[in-house]
Length: 110
Image: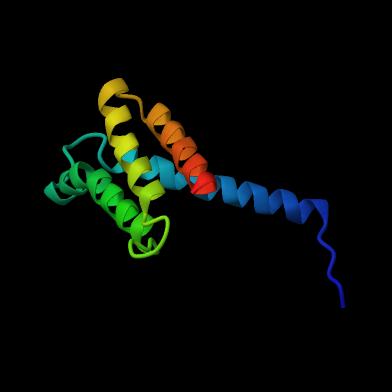
């Protein structure tokens, strides 16, 4: 039997989802507005971006075969390009988009 959802149910679902998202965004500001955050929060805040980048690098290379053609050249070239372009321009979007283009072109021609 097929259930049908009314407009009211959809609106309630949207409202509840919005309230939950708003609440999770508001919670840190309310919790730490009048005092300094604990040391563990400062530690997480400081090291999380680096940890995420390390996980992404490992994930990008996990299925790369360096023993068969194209020997991981597109992956390595795009990774090196990301680092070099980011050091030159200090712009994350430029380095991400340009290295993605380099990877896609090299993947197609190799």
